[in-house]
Amino acid sequence: MARPKLFDRDEALQAAIRAFRNTGFAGTSTDDLLNAMGISRQSLYDTFGDKRALYLEALRQYNADSLSRSLRALHAAPSPREGLEALLMEFVSRATENGHCLGVSSIGEFGRGDDDICALNDTSGHVLTTAIRQAVEAGHASGQIPKSVSPKATAVFILTLLSGLKVLARGGASQNDLRDAVRVGLNSLG
Image 1 (cartoon, one colour):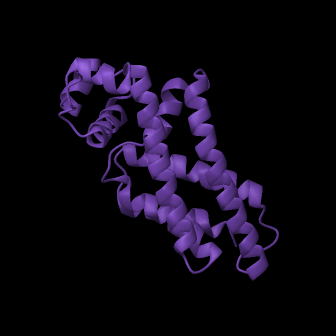
Image 2 (tube, helix red, strand yellow):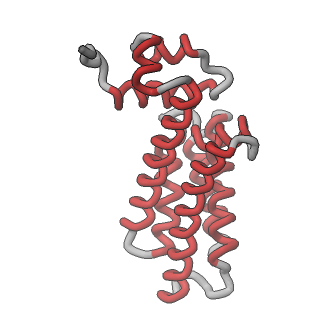
C-alpha cells in the first residue's frame, strides 16, 4: 500500500519555481530543490519525475500564472490603451518583489536549444502577442491609438519592453525606473 504524501504538491512546486528562478536549471542542484521544497528525494521522483521534468512543470506553471496576471490586467482596464499600460504596470508592481522571471531566465539559459522549453515559452508568447494585437486593434477602433501604429509591431515591442523590464529588475532597477521605462514606451503609441 502506498503511503500518503506528507507535503502539499502545489506548495512544493512553488518552492521549486522560486529555486529555479533564483539560480536557473544548471545552478539548482537536486539537493537545493529537496531543501527548498521540503521533500525527500524519493518524493521528488515519485511526484515530479526527475529534475528536468520538475523544471518543465515549474516553467509551465510559472508561465501560466504570469500570463493569467498579465491578461487579467489587460482586460480589466476601461480602455485598450489603459489595458496595455496596466499590463506593463502590473509587471512593474511585482517585478522587484518576486525575484527573477523564470521565462526570461529559461530563454537566457537554453536559448532555442531545447524543444520542450521553446514550446512552453512560444505558446505563452503567442497568447500574449495575440492579446496585445487585439488591444491595439480595439484602440484603433475607439480612436485611442492611431491607425498608423502597427498591431504586430506593437506586440513585438511590448514583449521586448517586458523582457527588458525583467532584466532591469533582475539587475536591481527600482520600481520608479521601471515605471519611467514603461511611460517612455507607451509614448510610442501616440
